[in-house]
Image (tube, rainbow, N blue to C red):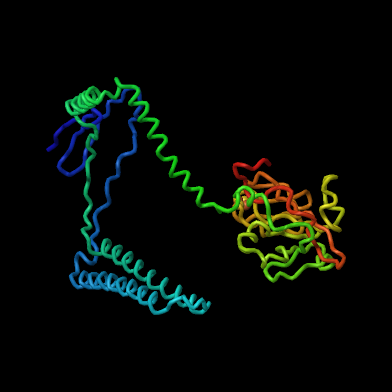
Length: 358
Ligand code: FES
């Protein structure tokens, strides 16, 4: 037995009682070939072992509720660990224990629910295939007509189209009302200083010694051999009010190249010392640390999005999404042979921001 009806697209659908349907499409301009690939249908249904064997079904049920109980135990253990392994002492060992057991408890809590739910669905829930036929999503013409009339009446009664001054001022108010929320974002930046100024300057100033990161031991020019690279911080970093914030801007990479391989513009000739050059370690793309130095090619690689900078050529970008070279720190040596900065960077380090001119 088969019955014919129209579907939502005006195509004639013949539905048979075996659950399958054939569609004769109104082709219009479309070309439908005679040997179109036939719908292979669903493979024959295979019963699961839990459908045929009640003992296995019982085992699966046990496994599911055991996983849920494990989840409860994990969540409770996490709370107990939080209470009985406090981190107030500031001891590194206590902090580690706290994070380990709170984390393990939470992981067990989530894992138990996840595994239990999956096992329940796969082993015990209804496993038959069923077909959900598409139905037209649009309302019938009568409903659509009524909706349009309601809109028209609402417009007339409210005077929305007629009273243009009220309508336009409402639009203005709607545009203006998120502005205070955006203004509040200003509070995310430090209040006592201008954030733009903070971004423009780092701790480096004339005479600051270049020191190893993280020990803070000053570096002598004689220690920097050709091909070597040093991660560098200002020697006085520990004296800063917010050392980590300062380090994030002032961190530098120091390398020594054969003088003959350095390409330097005339005005930058004095910024290096005997083949030793210092560049900001903050990537100009989105600020990751440019930490990988390829000695043979003199390329610095940013691991985040693979930008590459050529140290022998003023750290210009040779590959990747970064748009600007790494800023160079002008250096020289003091009377004891230690490397020192000649000044701060001549341009802001790191990625671009609105007020940045170059
Ligand atoms: S942050 Fe360095 S390439 Fe994206």
